[in-house]
Image (cartoon, rainbow, N blue to C red; front, side, top):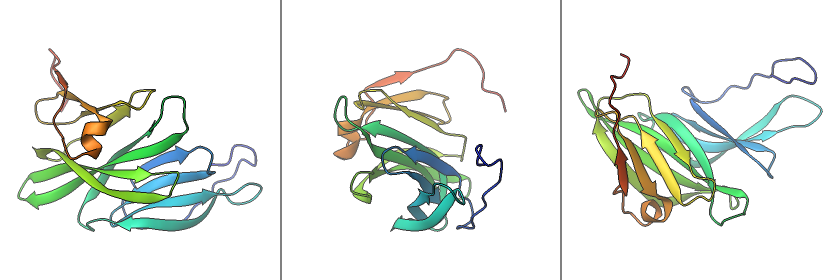
Length: 171
C-alpha cells in the first residue's frame, strides 16, 4: 500500500513470501520466500516495489517464518538480519533454523544455527537495540530462548537464558 498515492502495488514472487523487513539506508525490503532470500528495491514516485534480487537460495520445501534486523556495532546502522526457516524433517517434525544476512554487503552469510526441532509453530524473534542479544520463541515448551548474536554467528546455538511462562498457550 502506498499511503501517498493511496494505491496498491502488487508484485509476484515465489510462493510463501512470509517474511519481510525494511532495510533502512538501502531503500529496500528483505524478503524470505520458499526457495530464496532476497531484496525488493523500493521505488519512489512510482510503483511501490521494483525488482526482486535473490541473495541466496534456500531449501524449496522450507517455510520462512520470521525475520529480525539488528546492528553489528553499537550505534551503527541496522546491517544484519536473522531469518527463521522451518525445514521439514519427516512426519510432523520440523527443524527451526536461523540464516543470517549481511544487509550492508547484501549477502547471506554462510553461518546458520538450528534452534530446535518439533512441530511447526508460530515463531517470533527480536533483537536487542545494541544487537548483542537475539530472543526466539515458538518451541513446544513455549519458552523464550535468549542468545548472544556473536555465539549464533560462531555456530554456538546454546541459549544464555531460557524464559518460561506460567500460563497456557492458545491453540
